[in-house]
Every structure is written in structure tokens, then in C-alpha cells.
Length: 399
Ligand code: HEM
Image (tube, rainbow, N blue to C red):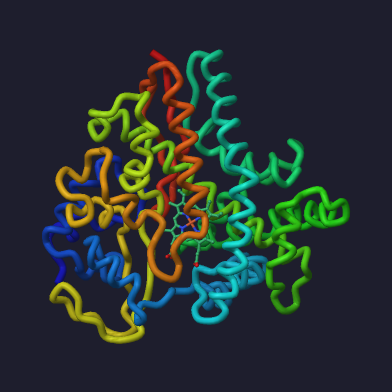
């Protein structure tokens, strides 16, 4: 059940994806949409139909890192306490009634957040581009894509420029969604959780006193407070969750989206028409590259028998480039009927920030569509995350 194509890519999904990933996944999928990947010690799912079916299957369960964080506490300087306090606010690993409660609250919060930040992100996009035009070029990843979502949130929260600088690293908390590989990475995530919590909780305290931020009031009205926590802590942790989940995902979709639009994949689309293909850009980039789950029962799919307890990795980006989803020429960006595929997941854990993510990508592409013609000024530099496609740097020039 392991094909030759997997055997020749033994670091796949353990490192950031190469820019030309499509042919690798095509080769793996043609060996079989579900295969054992020895280097991941998990089943690797690359087919769209199989991914959709399994992600909605009742015997496919969230894989939590909580036990590992407990075990690592105190080892090699790792302090797990801030991370463990954060986990009760992260719905990714919850199931049943606890998950339902958390999702209900987060869905309400996402509605308020949408109303508060989406127009602001559009204004920011236009402002950053005006600056870039004056300068004759810009780093699209660093000074555009990665700023829109967090800066719009900081604005909604009334967080001043002095505190923003120290909160810029909160997006790194997204590292919690992937298995860190070294003790240094665990140590850093633990420290980042503690530091961002101190800054956010002191801001929340001030803001609750003044009543200045309607976003904080909305979170206060619906967020369940975990045992041994205060309302201030619960709000601060929910804010960290919102910043961590949306920042790199949106930034990656914009930066790699523009990269693909300027490459062979976007050959047929003129810059002024970029907003019209925003949904297909989202499908094509799939900034959450892969997700992990565990089986709670034996499952047979695509002729493969998987056993209860087996880990499964879903290569969302591969599923989104499967002809079974979007028909011919899946690596080309086009106006299509198939929508965004699995870019925001499916089933019980489907993304609560879907409207926000789609809207900000659309605003970013609209602002870029009105700008003079763009071309790459150098190769993009990827961040070191294997699970989220984030770009650290992408120099751009106006023609
Ligand atoms: C382009 C932007 C985004 C992409 C591609 C994306 C992708 C995803 C995916 C694939 C999942 C499913 C994870 C799983 O099944 O394990 C997910 C879940 C989630 N997303 Fe997003 N997301 C984006 C933006 C956002 C934003 C802006 C927010 C916050 C407002 C957010 C908050 C969440 C939360 C809280 C969950 C967990 C839901 C649950 O477990 O029930 N996401 N996202």
C-alpha cells in the first residue's frame, strides 16, 4: 500500500512544500488516493472524494497534542503551562458537546469580527499599495499579505502601535497546529504563548474597564470561561486563537495566490481580472496544506483497510488539485464551478473564519487589480512551516 512516488519524496509534508508540488502529488495520487506513508507514520490521503468522505466520517477523530505537552513539561527547559491553559479554547481537538459549545461561541464572535475588520482590511490594502507605488516596489509577503488581517484586528481592538510591535509574533502560535520536531520548537511555542497572553490580557483588562472595543464586548458575552480561569484570561486566549488561526492562513493565500497568478497557473488571467478568480486562487493555494486525524474504528476506503488507532494525514492541497473536484486542468487558475474545495476543511471542524478569509483575499486581489502591472522581483522565501503555506518574503516590482 505504499507507492513508489511516496518513497521518492520522504520529506514531503515534513518540510515546507516546494513551489512545484503539483506533479509530486499527482504522481502519488495516481499510485492510489490513500496510501501508507512510512515517513509520516500515517495513512496519506491525496484524493478529493476520499478526503471529503473521511473528514466527515464519525470514526475519524481529532488528534490532540495535549498529552504530549503534559509529558514534555519541565523537559529541556520546556514550560507547557501557558500552552495547556490555552488548549481549552482551541476547538480543533474537541469533540461532542464541548466542541459544539465552543463552536457556537466562536461562530458568534466571527460574525462580529467580520463586521469589524473586513472593510478595514480593504482600506489597509489600498493604503499599503499606495505606499508601494510611491516606493516603486514592495515586499508583497512582508508589507502587504501578512499585515492585512492582524493589523485590521489590532485596529478593531484599539491596540496602539507601541503594543502592536510586541504582538506581531502571535501569528507564530499557529505552530501549535503542527507537530513540532525539536524541543527548541516546543520551548519557543511555550514562551510565545506566555508572552502574548501577558500583553493581550493586560489590554483586555483595560478595554473591559473602558468598554472601548465592541469586539472584546462580543467575546465577553459568549465565551465560556474554563475552570481556574478568569473572564479576562478567557477573552485574551480567544483573541490569541483568532489572531493565530487567521494570520498565516490569509497571508499565505494572498502571497502564494499572487505567485501562482503570475506563473504558468495564472497565464490566462489578466491582473485586472484577479478578483474574479479569488475562489479558485483559494482552492489552488490551500494555505492549510495538511491536517492530521486518528481512526476510532476500522475503515475500508479505496481498497485500503485502515485499522482503529491508525493516524491519517490529509493532504488538503492534493485533494484540491484532484481532477475529481475540478475537472480538467486542475493546476490552472480559472473561473470554475467547483468552488474552494477543502481549503477551509469540511465536516464538524469546518473553518469558522471562512467568510473573513475569502473576503480579505478578495479585497487584496481587488486592490492589486487596480495597481500598475506587477512582476516578481525575486524568488519567494517560504517560512519553515510544513503544514501552513506561508511566505516570508516576495519582492515585487511595478512594470
Ligand atoms: C484563508 C484563510 C483560512 C484558511 C485557509 C483556513 C483553513 C481552515 C481549515 C482547513 C480548518 C479545518 C481544520 C480541521 O478540520 O482540523 C479551519 C478551522 C478553523 N479555522 Fe480557519 N482558515 C482560515 C481563516 C480563519 C480565520 C480568519 C479564522 C478566525 C476568525 C479561523 C478560525 C478557525 C477556527 C477557530 C477553526 C477550528 C474550527 C473547529 O475546530 O471547529 N480561520 N480553518
